[in-house]
Length: 441
Image 1: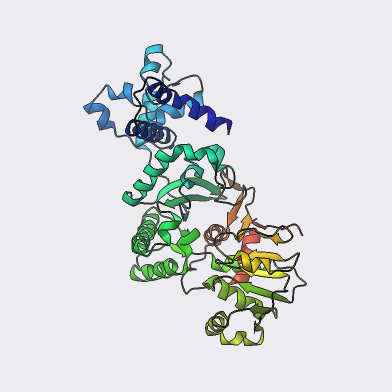
Image 2 (image 1 turned 45 degrees about the vertical axis):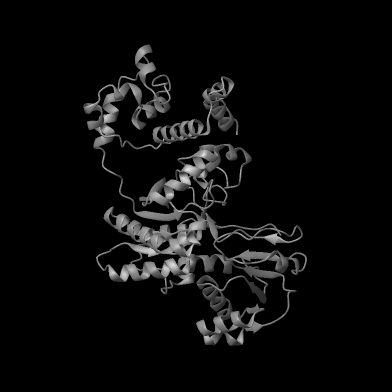
């Protein structure tokens, strides 16, 4: 908070002066904020992309615009390269690091890191870009939540939304290591609202396909689908894409099998019946099938939901019950759970989501489990940021599933209509050091 406010305070000085002298205008402020934010993100992006020919064509450029490698030396050497954005003052006052040119040359020659596992996620809310590691570290290190002071960033937020409509390529947001595996998180530059738009689905499917192709070319073994990338429609499109491109060696995982395993192992052991609410998805079908096989009664309230589950597996009939009861103490909830439905739950009800997004907590006298996720082992390094709304060092089921697939060397896909063994992926996750999360009851 202090970091953000002090940063804003310094950068607001030119704007406040222009207001004071009566020369401010909305276009000037918008342009200023956009340029400042771009230069700030460029300097902290941790890779060098400004080509050498730019400095050859226009030599004075080295005194006007800094490079990522130039600013990185300030963070490693501390007493050099002080200038933010314009290196001229460091050259004037003799504070330029002696290795600046060498580091720049070395950074340009460095080959791009080849990941073993890629987790493909996307932007969620309009201000979610600030919660990425390349945004504000103070925000990315905490579970994502709306912040009032981000309203002051509306010019940049608006500009970033416009850029997502133009820029069509997934970008790297995070790098981690696990044992000998190199992990990367890639972000599709699309928001939730675009994923829910019918007019954007074809474009998004194309972006996902391009990301799979890029990951394959970089030598990745596994790509896991995060958030709405694992939605049934996109997951099926991925399955078709893989079949149409047999040259792809990379395996794609949507994490449904592990998500089901996590939910199953979150249900109290003495439970004999559960109530199923929310949209009937592939995750719900897998989960209900596993529960019925274990002899646990699954209650559903809608006839169309009941028929859809039986259509998935007609052997479920003995333990699948069409009911009007709400007095069940364990609810398995998917997307679409309403506040009205929650109000009908008895006191002390445990809500366990199998959904992609967490349900809105409206009951103070009930318990809410987190969306399918596991705590990462200590051997998973460089986890300095939070994954969406999850706590620090907690990873979504799909992300864990991708890592486990690569670690175990499984040469199979787990997406679309393909379903991996629930018990096998659960046991392998535990063997790799991932731990289930508990809820206080």
